[in-house]
Length: 61
Image (cartoon, rainbow, N blue to C red; front, side, top):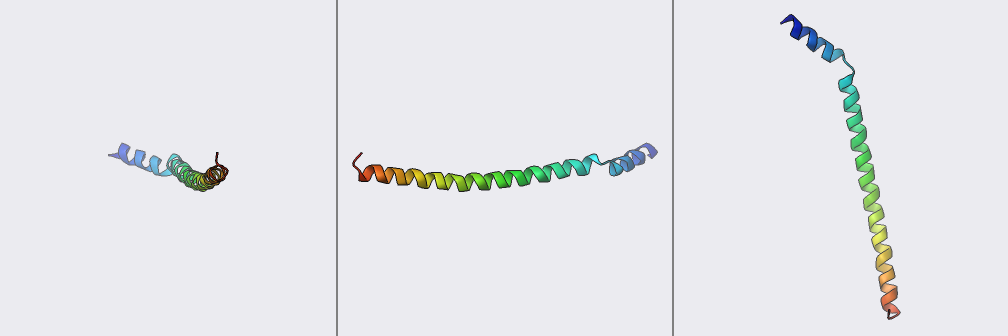
């Protein structure tokens, strides 16, 4: 039982757990920002192609 308690204390003192959590939070934030940027860029690109299509159709091409 003593060995288990010592391992538990070492685990709590270890900085690997918090570091992994910090990396997970950073990764989640990066993914959220990337998805937002891709969504915004995607809608703008869609608008550009829609305008190009409308201009080509208006010119009879």
